[in-house]
Amino acid sequence: MNKQMKKTKLSTKIILAMVLGLIIGLLFNPEISLLPQNLYKLLESYAFAPIGKIFINAIKMLVVPMVFISLVNGVTQISDIKKLGRVGAKTLIFYLSTTALAITIGLSFALMIQPGSNSSLTSGNAAYEVSEAVNFIDILVGMVPTNPLQSMVEGNMLQVIVFSLLLGVSINSIPKQKSKIILDLFDSMNHLVLKMIDIVMLMAPIGVFSLILKVAATLGFDSLIKLSLYMITILLALFVHLTVVYTGSLVIFTKLNPIIFFKKFWNVMTLAFSTSSSNATLPVTMETVEKNFGVHKSIFGFTLPLGATVNMDGTAIMQGVATVFISQIFNVDLTLSQLLTVILTATLASIGTAGVPGVGMITLSMVLTSVGLPVEGIALIIGVDRILDMCRTVVNVTGDAVVTLIVAKSENEIDEEIFYSDKNLMLDSTN
Ligand code: ASP
Image (cartoon, rainbow, N blue to C red; front, side):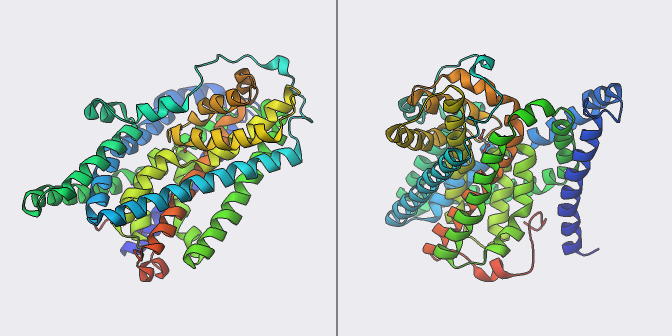
C-alpha cells in the first residue's frame, strides 16, 4: 500500500469513527435506550472513558513542548526585528478584528432571531455557582510568569508564550557563534515533536470514537428542545462566520482557493470538533498548515500557538448570543453602548479564554458582568454547552489557520505549489 493510500485511510477512518461513535452513542442514550444502560456503564468505565482520556492526554502532552519549541523556532527564523514587529502587529490586528466581527455577527443574529423572547425558560430556572468574574487587568498581569517552569507545568499558555518570545528575541540578539548550538537544538527538537504527533495521531480514530460516543450517549434531549432557538442562533452565526468571513478574507487577502483550503483542513476541523480544544488540536493544526498549505515555519510557528491561546472567534460568537439571550430571559433591554461594551469585553475575554473545553462559559461571566447582567444566567445555557463548544472550537481553529495564511501571504512565505498540490499530506510520517 503506498503512502498516500495509507494517509487517506487514516483520515477516512477518523470520519467513520466519528459517525460510528455518534450512532452507537445515541443507541445507548437513555432517551432512546436501544442498547442497555448497564452495558454502556460497563463499557464507559472500562473502555470509552479511559481510551478517550488517553488520547486527549497524549495530544495535550505535546502542547507545551510544541508551543515552546515552535515559538522559539518561529521567532529565531525572523532575525530581522522589524519583520518580527510587522508579523506580530499584523497577526494581532487580524486576530482581534475578526473576533470583533464575530461578536457583531453573533449579536446581530441574536437581536434578529430573539431566542430568549420565545424561550420557555424563565429567569427562575437560574441557579449557578458564581465563580469570580474574570478581570482583564488580571489577565494582563498574569501573562508575565515569575517562574517559567511552573507556567509549563501548569500549562499556562499565555505565560509560556511570553517566555518563549523573550527567549527567541534574545537568541536573535546574541552573536551567531554563540546562538548556533541552541538554534540547531531547537530545530532538531521541532522535528522530534512532529514525529511524536504522527505517532499519537495513529490513535485518533479510536480516540475520536470514544469521545463522540460519550457526548451522544449522555445528550439531554429535553434541554436541547428548550434551548433549540438559542443553539440555532449560534450555529447560524458560526456558519456565516466560517463561510462568509473566512472564505471572504481568504479570497480578498490571499487570492487562494477557499475550497482547497477547506478540503485540506477538514481533518483539523474534525479533530477540533471531537476534542473541543484548540490547544489539543494545535499540534495537528501546525503540521497541516506546514505540509498541506506550504506556510513557512517562521510565520505559523508564531501565529498558531498565539492563535490557539488568544484567538477565539467561535467563542466570541457564543458569548454575544448568550449575552443577548440572557438579557431577554431576564427582561433587560441592552442599549447601544452596552452592545458596544459586549463587543469590547468579549474580544478581550477571547484573549483570556484558554483553548480547552468549556472555558468560554467561564469567561462569559466577564462579559455578563460588564453590562450588569446576572452571571447566574449561565445556568440556563450550560446544559447544551458541550455541543456548542465542539462547534465553536472548529471556528476558533479555522480562524487561526486563515489568519496564518493571510499573514504568510503578505510576507511572501507560502509555497503555493504545496497549497495547490493534490497531496493531502497531513499525518504523513516523513519528518
Ligand atoms: N473550547 C474552546 C477552544 O478550545 C474554548 C471555549 O470556547 O470554551 O477553543
